[in-house]
Length: 170
Image 1 (cartoon, rainbow, N blue to C red):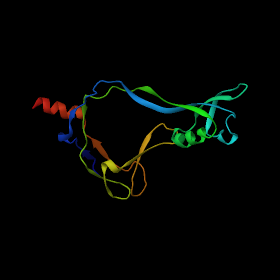
Image 2 (cartoon, rainbow, N blue to C red):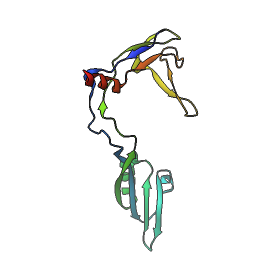
Image 3 (cartoon, rainbow, N blue to C red):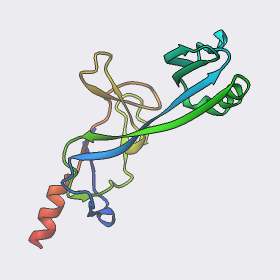
Image 4 (tube, rainbow, N blue to C red):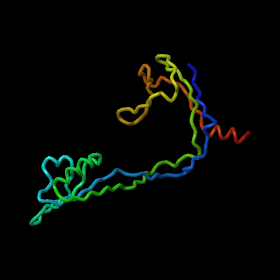
């Protein structure tokens, strides 16, 4: 079986507006914090929903501060808080900077090319080949979506450097 050469779609080549950038800013997870003032503290059946960070008792009321474990349950939690006392809710979301390799100068796609599985001889579109990680996380292998065998494809991806070099020489 001969090696299949997968070419870059020339029409897809474009400048990357983020070229050279080595970090990306993303929104972090939502944290829902609360403050509850009332004649009773947190009901025992709420202990699985919240993390109590502070709990004080004065002569007339409890003051409880904490964080909701699952922000998706905020609406239900607010309804429950209203039955217990006076409350305040804050939604906080940190901004996180993720460091990564510098973004490439060009963006591009490969042509939809079929490759043959050497085990079952099925013809698979290259993009449909499943890539999986070994249990130790040390390496990747490709799995045929038809027969499930791994590393049964022989192909080579065209390099963007070769394309741009040829175009600059023309």
